[in-house]
Image (cartoon, rainbow, N blue to C red; front, top):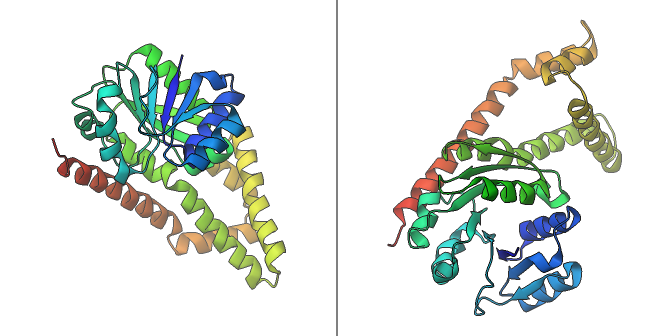
Length: 272
């Protein structure tokens, strides 16, 4: 088996490192990367083979496009004669399967993936959509690759990728935003920056770990912390009065709408 990564950036590095830890061998992975220093570093760090974009691709079971969305059209068109029946996987945000397929001369066997940045520490959440030409073995291989960077779910409609983008793709930014606010709240209580940071970060880390290990849902866990007439109840009431829950839902809806817009823009920009 050979899996070829087109692009050797941070997400590709996260996947390659995770895959090797999960049992893939360095010999099974190849990276196409224009930056010579990055190629040297990838080979040194993981033992994988690398080549520049001018070199022919090795025969591969899967080719994963890990380039920026604005670069994908040119890269895909330059490689469309070298796919040779491989499974194509794209992690380029906002680029629809139909669009990528056209750039690859109507190639049908494509998986579109929406990962998120916690993949960089193997705690990612990815959503994946497959065309009807993607078979069970393709899905199994994709699942193994994505398991190397965290959890994943399959969606049956490509439009669901917009929802994945809104919740888990953009979601880390929402969490970081809340962490910023909690740090600011700690500073307002008179704590210095280091203690404020530690209070905010560990509170999030501990709460998430508790939620993941508990059989209770988030609402039940919140209620268990919230004593009637206590400090937490007063805080939750303030959040509800400020309609924080409604604002978070609206924010995710805005992200999903923008994801749909980006997909429509990429479709309109097709140059057949």
